[in-house]
Length: 299
Image 1 (cartoon, rainbow, N blue to C red):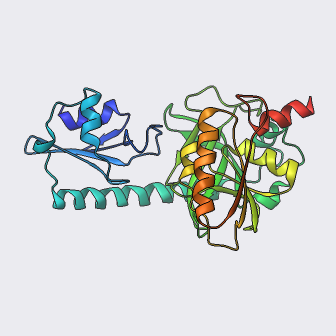
Image 2 (cartoon, rainbow, N blue to C red):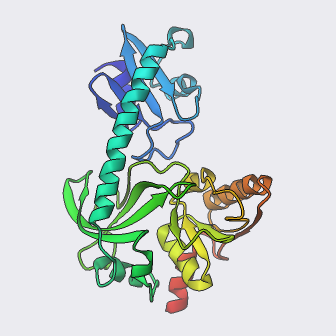
């Protein structure tokens, strides 16, 4: 095993042929399966590593983690190799995007399915699923790549700043919808998601932002606002909004934990610099989100 392959696998990435893709340990510390900002390979016995997402100085971080002892001055930047890797990644991303689009096209309305039972179990009642079928669907047997099983799944379409379809978020469910499936991970991305969000509602002047799908639907049920789910704190911080008048006024419904509040405050500052009016709200109880609040109210 080459040094590049060893590092790729240590970072939770994938090695194919002569190169690997992995989460960048600096700009993608969450290490999710859909995060592949770091490319690695060996050329003439030398380690080639490049963060093509943010251009991070990754080698210093790898040295600190004892993943490599290669000095910085021995890691060359090969423009031709970088172009080749980018071309390969574009092909892989196009394939993932097509797979995501095909999967979502196979989905059906959540009404009367395990997805409806799951959401109602989370306190989200009275959903008009036909109205949001462009965003939320159910698949009876979606592939769970990590386990190789085919399982019921709730599918959510992610859209970019121009409304263009990106990847698909999957929540794998028990057959009766009584909870998430007994697999890990229970939620997975398929295809690109950078800058995007799951949009519940039209492109209004006032929108709310939340992390999780369940939290977003809870806020929508309670407020009747258009709500977009960013799917994670990194998704919130990386969200790209359409230009005004869309989202001139933003309510960030944060999870009440240090990561959630920090991400909300950073995002609020960024959007305020875009001349948008932003407020941050979160539940009173530490460790809770707005879906917890809705569930408690229904008890």
